[in-house]
Amino acid sequence: MIDRQKLHQNFQYFDNETIIEIIDIFLEEYPERFEKIEKNILDNDFVQLKFNSHSLKGVVANFQDPETIELSRKLDEMAKNKTSAGLQKVVEDLKLACTKLMDELSALKAELSRK
Image (cartoon, rainbow, N blue to C red; front, side):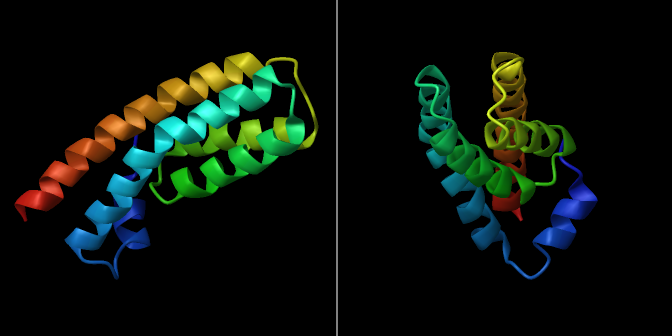
């Protein structure tokens, strides 16, 4: 769940239109980002998995959702250490957390659009 107070602090200098644009970019790019992560795992490509998981971690950190941040951090760490044990579970949990985050961001976007 998004920590709204931290989110507002993070975006305090942005107007609603800019925040909506940032949300839109994430929502648009997410499917391809996650597709790459899943392909990296199938290919056992820890170098690209590290790159793509680190990128996702940086993006989701903007939205102040502790669960998604922690799972993306964990995936990034596993990729760095080339740890395959438990990797699929972390990816499944992260995908679920990202789905919840996208739902919350869509709701937030609707709120911001009305202001």
